[in-house]
Every structure is written in C-alpha cells, then in structure tokens.
Image (cartoon, rainbow, N blue to C red; front, side):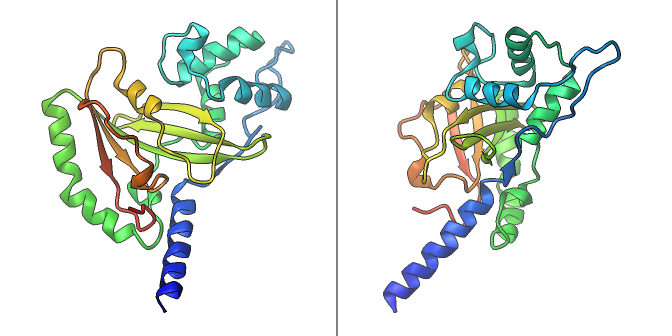
Length: 229
C-alpha cells in the first residue's frame, strides 16, 4: 500500500508540474506578409528558428544590448541588427505571445487541484508581499516557464512578469527536472541591486531553487501540489 500511495502521489505531482509549466508556445505563429512597397514585415520561419537559437542560453548584454534579460525592446533591437528588420512593437509582441510570453492570472498558474489554495493565498498572503514591496520600492515578479516546441532541441522560455505587466525572459534548453536558474533571478534584481519579490509557480519544486541567494532576492512559493519538498 505504501508503494502504491507513493506512486499515486508521484503521478499527481508530475501532472501538476506539467500543467503549471504553462502550456506550449508555438513557433512561426506571428503575422506574415509584406508591407506596401514589398518590404518584409516579419521573420521567415527559418529566421525565427535561428533567432531562438541565438537567444538560447544568452543574455542581451552579451550582445552589447542594455537589458539584462530579454524584453520587447531588446528583442526588437536584436531582430533589427541581425535581419535588418525594423519591426513595430505589435509585431515583436506577436512573437513573444506565440512563445507563451504573456500575463497569466494566478489561477492559470495552478493546476485544477490547487486553484482554491491559490485563491486563498491571493487573499491572505499576496497583499503582504505587495505592501512590503511598496515600502521598500521593490519590484514584484511572477515567474514561470513555457515549453516551446517546433525547435530542435526543444526550448523552455523562462519568463518574469512584473506586477506592472512588463515581461522579461530568457530561453533555455529544457531538462527533465530543471533547476530555477540563479543567474536569471540575479538579473531580475538589476545592476543597481534593487529588491525583487519573486513569486514562483509550480514549474520548479522547492528542491530546485538556488541556495544562498542575496537578501535582495525574496522568493515566495505559489501553492502547488506538484512543488515537492
């Protein structure tokens, strides 16, 4: 019976974690075509696949760009530099949306078994986090990951969405049970070392969180039955 219970719990945990990864992103889902005059207005599929490889495991400052994590602005700058395409903000945003980079409601970050717990957490815990952030002029981020298919190898898009709706991200090669990247968290804090309150969904079990983070990085677990010990 003990083995059966452990196997059942492991199955629920696995299902929950797969759900909270946030679904699948799609490659080449942005608008295609040409503007009047024949000017290209979007990346070709091959260009988009190449762009994903260019971003994979790299940060904007490694390419001489100002952002520490990828944003709409730094992504647009990279596209213009590499493909000589000056895309409008909406076109760049279409790629980010296709890759799973969007605001998600707290309930969307939970599996069906955890929705009630997330609702209670939003009522009881989240106001304390936002109040502390306001008092210390800190940012609040919601982080998670989306599995991006259509590329070889597959990719995980790690995103941080601020309470004000700004999206910052990086692209990594997925593993079976990936750790929460320390570098990603440190870059959220920025060069000026500002405090960041980071709400972590069930994409990462607690055991996969980095240890000995600086005090300016404060992690808050969103309730998840798939989090693990």
